[in-house]
Image 1 (cartoon, helix red, strand yellow):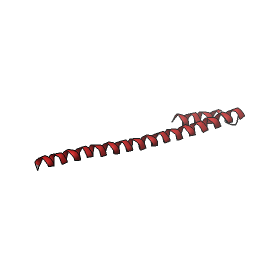
Image 2 (spheres, helix red, strand yellow):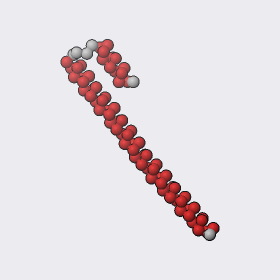
Image 3 (cartoon, one colour):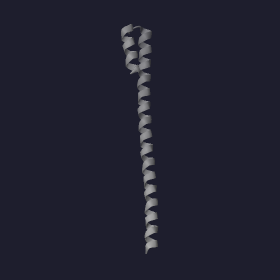
Image 4 (tube, helix red, strand yellow):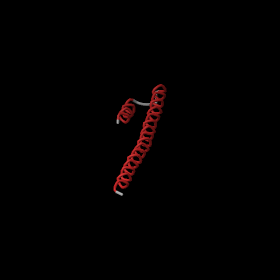
Length: 76
């Protein structure tokens, strides 16, 4: 009787490790996908801002103080 109980205990311990490992793996995957999405969004926004900035600079619509303020905002 005692031997059977110990085998069940080992089985549940291994099952717990498997479930914990799988849940950690899933959380890790979702977290990394979220981080990659955030980085991609920030990159796209910075790319659009830089394109608009260069276009406006070529046209000559942005005064220097506005340009410095934009650089300050991007540096934040």
